Length: 199
Image 1 (cartoon, one colour):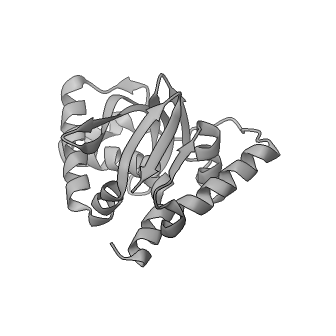
Image 2: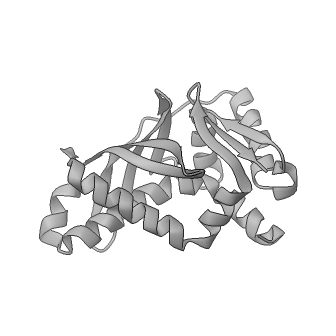
């Protein structure tokens, strides 16, 4: 991976953790049901409004320092960066202007995501929540959606399996994701923090 490719991916990391997950889930529904009639129960007419979060100055300073490492491949080399949910939400707010679309939290060492994604094609919103588990399998990092709720409807186990298989295929086809995962010796959640250890 070249330095330019690595730098670009590091800057997009928060999206991969949050907004890409929500978009991929919606795309999966499109692929599964292939019709608006089947998709419409999972869409809402209005966006969800997330509560405004208040941040301390020390939270902002901590996020800024950690983001400067994550976004610079040379600084990240042989380093471990940990992010709590406050810092991750700050990155989404300040770096990507997504505070009104994505909200994250770490509970029981899993990623909990609230999302409200506009779907211009239907003039509606994909609102809901997801719980994601990170685990190692065959020395590879896997992100598994273990629970998903859209528009107040709980997604069944069979559909979750299809969604997770679809996300695995997307990961395999995306060179940037594969390069990033290869650059990490480990990605894990412990003590309700996301730990990124770089080679």
